[in-house]
Length: 426
DNA sequence: GCGATCAGTT
DNA sequence: CACAACTGATCGC
Image (cartoon, rainbow, N blue to C red; front, side, top):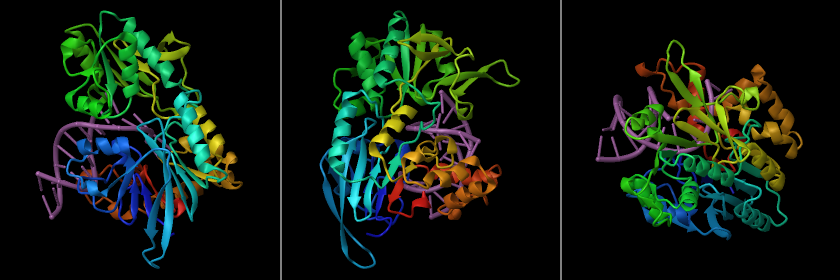
């Protein structure tokens, strides 16, 4: 089988078959309603959500994969014309929703997509059994891993615990309206939990209600504000200003579920506070002594960083300990993070390379230590794909010179993979 | 009108 | 540089 015939969450030309793990926007960059580059494989759930995102999509190109069964796909070498068989299985990733396990003459490759691996959850146990059965005695040669939170700083509880924290916050504000920031997809289980625990409906915006119906949730969500005090709103419309505005009408608190805790920082030369996710990975564990953590519920921290806003560590990505456990289970020969190749602070090989092939650690160590050599090598690799995309000729992009160019390139590139492509290509 | 790209948001 | 996921403006066609 030749290189690059299979792409996962990557939509550039040149592959024979394409796989989509889930419908978040950062995995569909380059995919449009006019898709015609080849058959697209995805889970049934994703296929049902497809029309709402890509209305004019040619559905004859869509291939639905049931979870937990092997699918055989014939590929043809463009140069020799010889046939090769690709085997692939979709496995629940507990995100939204699947990872893919591939077998072919290239060996065995596991692509997690975005995933959550909570050790004690019943779902994960099912997933683990399914994965081990599928692998039989095979080794995973390459693991493409969701390394979003692959840093010891990221230590958050299982979603069940975080969901209880949310319920406790709501229950302790019986006379408040509640708004919760969510995206167009994901975190449905959190809302379901709230609804069941508090016996209350949850407001969502009309498009989100459609999505909820497609996902099979009925009678829980509503678009009528009069029916509930709990509203799930688009994350981008969730701000301190929004909350302050709402509080001029009715007492309201906001809850932001995220694996990245938020902190308040004073803005220079300004009396206002500005807030952002804390991203100081270098400094080790996020500290509680900066005064942003004010509540302890169920033994883990919940941030109340503003009069009206709570940050709760509810994440659909695996935390560091879960990533470790997953790598120990899979024991891949090699692996590669699917997120932000430029950031050594979330490089799985840096933390877990010793669990893989023998000489990977030393290779990666040079890179991580930031020797000039290592740094520039990484740059060269990443820009290879994007050398034709330079926008530096535009008058409007003055800022984007020198290092900025490859940073942007890496950001654009940071999802997806061509299976069996030269390993250093993305 | 469309997709690609860019700027900006939480 | 350093989040993920998203919206809206602008550009070229």
